[in-house]
Length: 165
Image 1 (cartoon, helix red, strand yellow):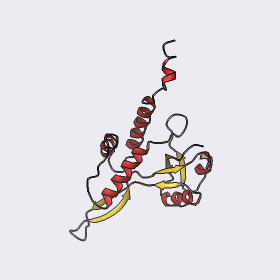
Image 2: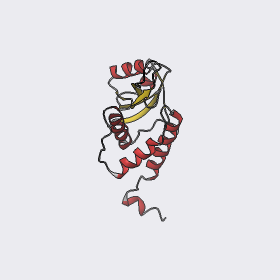
Image 3: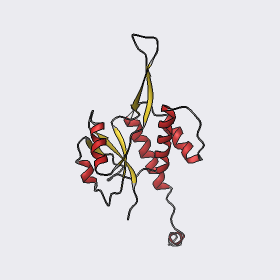
Image 4: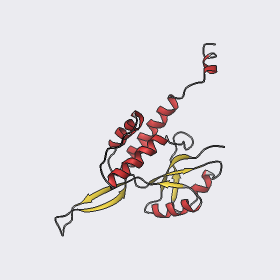
């Protein structure tokens, strides 16, 4: 049985909350990276803080494709489509999701440093280059990560013996 994986979906304009509700009803885990955004007020010198999605209208979802078919998720209210890399949606690296979760928490609660390995630091460096609300930049980053992941797949020892034939 295939394990749960994280995928990226695009929601219909202005319907992220509806997509979240319909996805959670069928048992799909949802993650929407958020950040604190400060906006200057016209009626006061104090800025107003709001929590906003980092990459509207995208949601990260985790589910087992053998238990919940992609077609079922695609037809839910608020869901527009799965983001595909190649001919089909591909699971995203867990380390990328971990970095986005840590970045969301730090953005909302504090800027405390978090210790993590080189791979997480590399993902965070790439994510920091994306400007707020830039979906195309997110998609380009994810495409690069998927490509790097597939290039770094190692062949088992038994496969190497046949590579010289």
